Length: 229
Image (cartoon, rainbow, N blue to C red; front, side, top):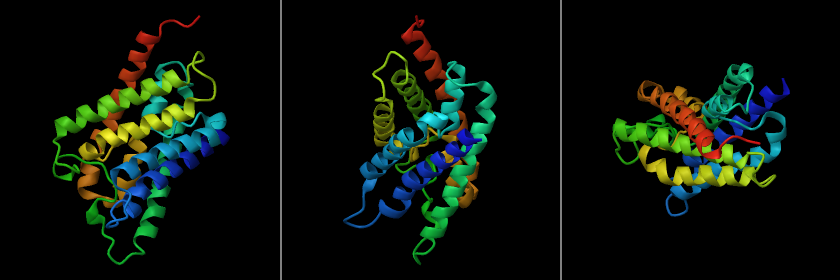
């Protein structure tokens, strides 16, 4: 059970740190951290957890990553569903903690989105569903390629957390204006269930697109990496 518990705690930290930075710290006038700060926060959550629990669970923190690694032969397929359930538990608990903290401010309202992912009128910059779908697929594909490459036995040892964390930071810098950046169905679910309504109706895209992107990433890396000796 240790690896499942580690995945829950790791995903809890990802949502608490990443979404928490967006909900609590990004919009403060003059001193808020903005898009750059939120992007860095997401990257730091993965980097810190990779060092903290990577040796226990592999630090997936993301259903799409678990699926992509299973397809690549890097992860036992029998563990895939328990991992995904553990990740969802961690993300939802983090969403609840964030809700309790944020609601301590009288001006707080779920109408602000609660860091949920969205498209159309719920995209930060008004990008339509097609743009959101393409963005999430491509970004998740690149994330899987980074993960698979950084953790390849031929890659420099022990540097994978840095590459993966910075990779996720870059992905957020590109795609926050489009969808608020998901590339992670658990991250999307953990806050969407508290918003309800539109966030739940649009949640399908933030499951479908990352999973497609993860499958593509696994296939692309297999093609470019070649057969291991």
